[in-house]
Amino acid sequence: MELRPILSTLLRSKVGLILIGAQIALTLAIVCNALFIITQRFELMGRPSGVNETDTFMITSMGFGAGFNVDTMIRTDLDLLRSLPGIVDATPVNSVPLGQGGWSEGVHLDRAQATSTTGAAIYFVDDHGLAAFDIDLVAGRNFKPEEVAMRPRRSNEWPPGVLITQKLAERIYPGESAVGKQFWLNVEAAPLTVLGVVDRMQMPWPRAGSRSGDVNVVEYSILVPQYAAGEGYSYFIRAEPGRRDELMAVVEAKLGESNRSRLVENLRSMQDVRASAYRQDRAMTLILGGVIAALLGVTALGIVGMASFWVGQRTRQIGTRRALGATRFDILRYFLTENFIITTIGLVVGVVLTYGFNLWLMAHHRSPPLPWFYVPVGIVCLWLLGQVAVLGPATRASRVPPAVATRAA
Image (tube, rainbow, N blue to C red):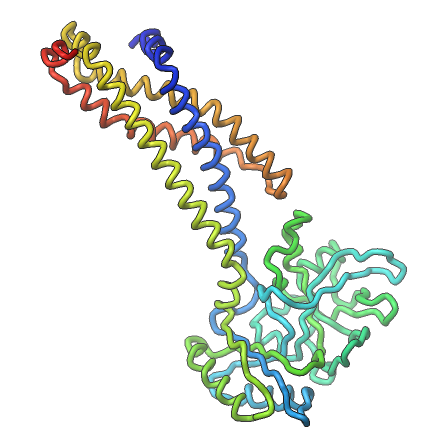
């Protein structure tokens, strides 16, 4: 088939060519970048927190009675929790991974260091913390019971030994064993010694490191053997497999009955914590998914509408070609080729828009570069969409009888 007649016809229908081409170009640019953003969000939401999320939950106790003593409450509550049938272990906590609120400090490798090497999340736990969170110790040792102490309010002092995550160990002691090494959280106080290294434990802030581009920052965490004093405290509890929901109600009731001078609140499973942390990301994926579906649908309808209009306008031309011996397949191929040319022109412009949009996202939203394969995959998909969309009008054109087409005004 000669392309010259098709191009000549398209140049006489510049408005339709520009409209459909622009629509295809915008669709490619938006769809490719939106799919990339959705993929990033799924990767973010799929990152492991490092703790057992299936069988764990947390609950907060807040005292209000005149003789309320938080130190006594913590120890009494822990004895109660650990004695309940079905409870694997429990630990006091100030925060949990993905909890979106907590404590952080800068890590100094030298007392004279002006600025910290990196920041890290601080988790206050006791010697049962590893078992309650169900995290693995990959080097060194756990805390001993006698090393756990109450941290006075407004204190700047830190215990002599802590646990750190493997990612943090690799960051501050690259290529070395972290066990036995020292660092400072407060350069005016004594240094902290690394007693052990745990496999993984995310920060409470799921987007930590997004500004710096360091994806490992989110796993820079320090476990400290202290109870941070306050009016109340939270407990992280691990249940036997399959019994979490049952034991959540039991724990809430038992803690409420054991001490009437406090409120028991904020009962949440770790799955609830994760769902809350990524609520906005899930909403964004749904919105962008809807935008993609709408764009593809509108583009397909635009192609169908324009092709149908052109079929109606070219009835005499189609009839003439049929009368001169053109087959139904020739008519079908004509419209498919014409649409392929329009789509290709739009896609060429769309490639430029796609990378331009990605550069804008990189400059203003710290988005990573668009992987190379998104554009060719998008091009192939839109080529197929265009061919499928035009197939209906093209088929109807190929079925017009030559005699009826010739008599058309």
